[in-house]
Image (cartoon, rainbow, N blue to C red):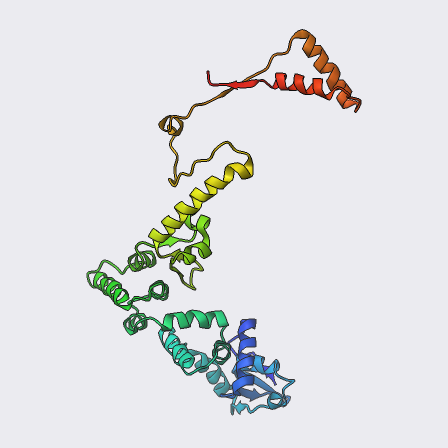
Length: 327
C-alpha cells in the first residue's frame, strides 16, 4: 500500500494522526480506506489518507498489519471517491460534541478515553466538559449560532443557572433589537459584577490560601486560565488585616523607625503635609583644613592596608558625611 497522488489530503497534523492511531488501536478500524491498483500491482490509497498514516504507526500490532481496502474499479471512480469523501465530510458541530462528551462523562467514561475516541487532546475534552455543564438554552443558542463558542465559554464562570439564563435572555434581546449580542467581557461582568481579577494588587498580596481560609470563594475558567476572587468584601478585609500586620512587623525586621499601612492604591503628592509629617534635608559636613589633610593621610593608609587608627578615621568620616536638618 502507498498513498496515491489522487488523494487530496496532502497536509496533515502529526499529533492528530497519533491520536487517530490510538483511537483505531483502542476501538478498531471502523471504516476501511479505498484504493486503486496500479500497473505494478500495488494499491494506492485514494480515500482514507489519515487512516492510512495512522495504520502505518500500528504495524507492531498484528491486528493492523493486514487491513481491508475497498477497491475502485477504474481511475475515474477512484478520483470521484477521493474528492467526494472530503466534500461530503461534515465536522461535528461544537454544541453536539459538547453534549456527546457530557453524556460519555455521565456514563463513567474517563477523560483520557474520550480523548482517544474522538482523536483530540485531554485539554480539549476538559474544556468541552466545562461547557457541557451549561444550561440547555445556552447550548441551544450555541447550536443555532446565536452564541459563539467564546461567548459560551464566558458563561461557564457562573454556577447560578437563574442568573445565567437572565444574562442569556438579555443577550438574545439585544440581538433581536439589532444591537448585537453581549461580548465576552460584558457576559462575565454581568454574571459576576463584584468579582476581582487575580491580577489585582489586593489579590496578589493576599493570595488564594489566605482568601479561601477566610471564607472567600475563588472562581475562573479553563478558557482564559484566569482566577477571580468572588467575595470582594472578604478580600478587602483580609487585605487590610494582612497589610496592617505586615506594617507592624516591618520596623523590627528591617530596622525602620515606623511604617504606616495605607490601603489606598494611590498616595497623593500632599501625603506628607496631610499627615503632618516633616521633611529632612542632608547637610554636607565640612572638615577643617587640618582635618582634611589628616583624612587624606588616613585614606592613603587604608588603600595601602596599613591603617591602624580606625577610630580617628571613623570620626572624620562621620563628620564628613554630615547630618540632616528640617530647615
